[in-house]
Image 1 (cartoon, one colour):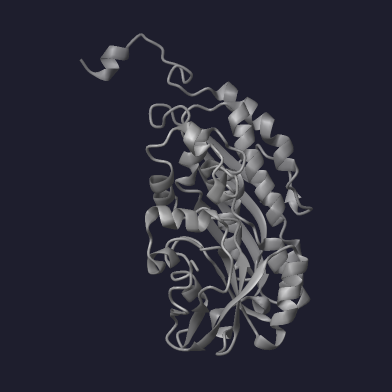
Image 2 (tube, rainbow, N blue to C red):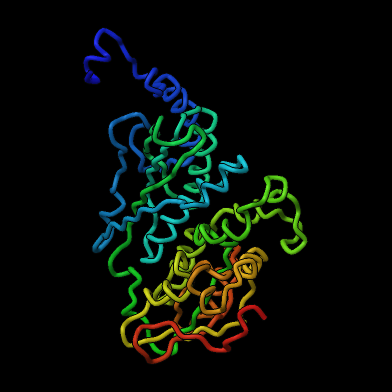
Length: 363
């Protein structure tokens, strides 16, 4: 008997198939205040239309306006959030991963769109998740102008969800950061991370949470300064947009290039901000690490080489700075609330990352 013959004469509604459109409408109502809190003057209309509208009138004053876009997700950090039932910070991670990326060109994030796929849509959970995205947008100064909440019954477990997002930014071409601006003798200024951010969590979860009970991963740990493993791993990614844009405006021309240290660590991200004729010589032992970083590295028994290409190791962003203006850049970053470290310099080379003081990373 075919499926058509089997179902003949039997009505199967969308709700019976597992999708509750009424709950979806309640979820949209629940998130409206959070979304509105992110709006900039350029936002046109409201959520609920077929597309988000945003005015580009500000670009008319630019010499050569360039749109910069980026998309990303939170990755397996979400699984830990689902295990412990803490959903309020992963939205910040989502915005951070996109906004910090587009910032690497010197661009200002304008607007953001999010996508939530969930096994069983519940308005209160969607509200918490999207409120986290809205908080990330407020920190980045961009507007949350649209998104999608998709219920996936039979494909995802009821409490399972995934988050992804898309960010658009704007920069005037004469002010755009470019690896070709980097010169030999530039100073590497690292900005402190808040923890692991959103990278390396497949490894971190394996060595820190697998085989442990919920009570174990939520209990205080002396090595983590009294934080639990769950809280330390769920610390949201730091968003550097406002502080870095402030520096670019206050000390124009001082920052030659910028690297967002994400998956691949310092080794596989700093090289993306280098021209083919320049190396970055990073001096190990010149910066501090949040306690969770060496904690996870010890649990995984990572070598120094592996650690440097897996995690950010306490440095979430690296600015490549004119040596004559480095003090002004550091002062501006510190005034904006960032902790900074001089972690090395640029030298003649082939566009690679090299390390000095080997063996001192965990000293």
